[in-house]
Length: 134
Image (cartoon, rainbow, N blue to C red; front, side):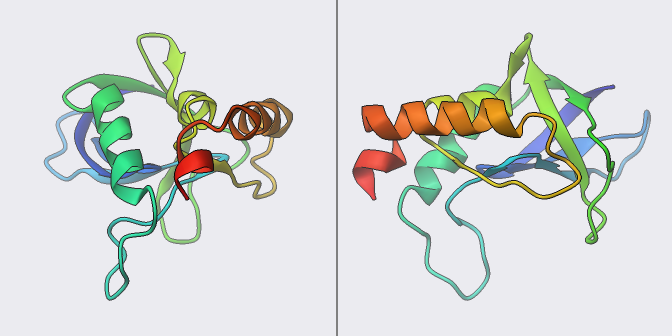
């Protein structure tokens, strides 16, 4: 399913127009990754939080993205859960590859866990992104 991006929330979350013609955008949480917090109420911005949000924005803002679901389509908070692609590039993987995210494995949505673990290991070993900054 291809959706229009409404806005970037943080490094691992965006708001998208999921239903055609909907005026309300919905949250989509990227499966398999976690980024430092940058918008949590009553909490300071974590190390590399703004950088992760900005990098996510550079990849998706103003674009259309393809969402691919795993085992579950929504989490307990009602957010869509997806692997997201822009121009054929998986954003979840790109965030890990460049050191803007860490892996977050939550069953049953783990079909890419091994791939994501390797990307995180490579970024950590190379000292990319948050691995050298935090």
